[in-house]
Length: 321
Image (cartoon, rainbow, N blue to C red; front, side, top):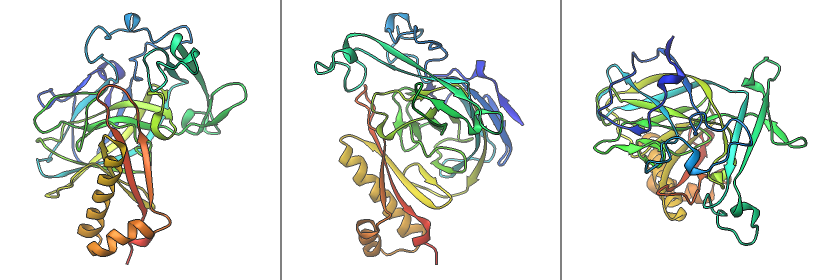
């Protein structure tokens, strides 16, 4: 199995000129040890999100959301599609969330001054499940509230076509910091390729997250991710896609939110028309009448340049012949 150790998973940009950390063939197993979004800064409730104390926060944008890569996939060319199989995510024994002044939508709140007058860090303990690992473990929000760990990769993508974008605020059809909780074990992630080798990056695992990631951080954690990369040759897609066992999800990021929702729905209609043989009229009517059509609002953080991320989802049972 190919391995990227954690000490090498500390890049902060999607850059097509980076030297590959790994070169793999389609289908080969890869293990990546990722840092959390703070590159290990948050270890206890005493570690506050004070910019002056955080390493890398003397830069703009700050050095946050470290990623591993690029991974070079043999045979990948511009105009192909990269298929990412997420096989397993094993998270660390804790995760964290940090709130405070000028962070998130209530960082300047007068209604609840405690949210904007001081920095607060919460550390969530992870306990193992029946497997003896956090793979089926529990996240303890406090002494009373807990839930199953539901990890996903928050930041992933290929090198963009012409630009270099940071892992903190870069987003586009190529991927980026999208915080889509469906980028999880058992699902296939499809990405358009812009450079030879695909040049794939990933990092920023979350142990769990609610819709929108409202505060701007979720249950951020270190992890070991196991995955495989494959190719679909000579195929173009307009944006990142997700294939779940029972449904498909078309994605888009934009502001305002209604533009992200509308464009994600357009992307889903295009998918139905071009690959499932649905007529344009039926696709248009299907997304308005199907009771199981869903809009997922994955990320809606009022932070920096981040756009809002929406996914239009429909069960595959309606698309099978």
